[in-house]
Length: 507
Image (cartoon, rainbow, N blue to C red):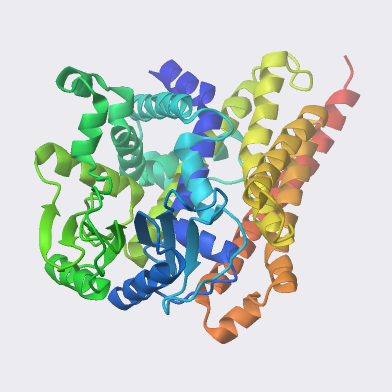
């Protein structure tokens, strides 16, 4: 079990660390996206009135469209996101989306994928096909589950060691950090790993669907209904959308999350109102379908049944969208503990084996490879994320493909850390990369203040707490990496006299 725990954790540990870091950031993905679109501000959606204003805007701007879709930008994000399908007579380059504030006014924001990219990366990765990416993530998650269970079996003093946190003791300290982060947050780490696998169960185990549906599209049409526009039957005015949204919200007791309008301006029009995220654990939305001309309810979709409810709860537990602010912060802290657990386990592998080397100053290739991969993975990804945020503020707003360039900047910076770790001595590489990460995170609030009117002090004065909170979070991260940098430098200084004494000793 000790062997199993060690090697399942090491072989896929670097990928698991990336999954944990980006997955943890997803608990505040809407706040991250809001900070990365400073043009929009933080005015919340006023539900039925906002949807009605958006429908009026679409009636003016896209009267010939076959479908309108209106969605909240997020549970906690401001404004509405609009999409529409242009008719056959529309030019090929005609716009198909827009962003509105709650008064129904169009807002032009910089092109970015914001926090949503970090969320999608934790299970779709990037630059590779999503199908194979999810298989890689699934294999890593299963390895994580094996490592957790084998670690529980291996750890004989799991409770006693939780209360031991001895710093400055080399290998003993890394083991204590690994144990403490693992044991205290063990229920969360088990839950998040298992529910992550269950969330993509139909991807990893599609045989149940294949055995019951000759055409898998029929399964998805039944499980996730998304009807196409019916045949048009003649012009007719669209009934007011606001009362339909209000009726759906009264029935559910929660805010609407989106509205689809099929064949607007036709007698066959339908208005489909979907529920938003509420305080229940299940992530599966409900919907009401209204006749678009009369406003009468003509259909309902309410996911039910043991299997559907179980799946919805599993996804809800994993994503944490139901969580109110305090619980969301606990999700974040637990996710950070998972990052610490994986990172400390990777470092512990090298710390334990260095003492066993014939010549610790001249380790073999495999040891050097793991050591340098640790630096690139553990420090490189946070450094890349800091660059991602800086690119959001520094790239020209009108740059073509701007969102992709932001993402490219993250991976180029991450690659640069791997290259730096490959050519520098490990101790210096740790110190230099943590110092660089400190500087980059600390630079984010400064660059934000210089390039927008959403700087830290301006945001506090205006009551824009999401923008102020994001800047403060960047400073906390900078302080964390600075602390790590100082400990690395002190450790190196303590080791230097010992090396000199050993080298000076007679043979």
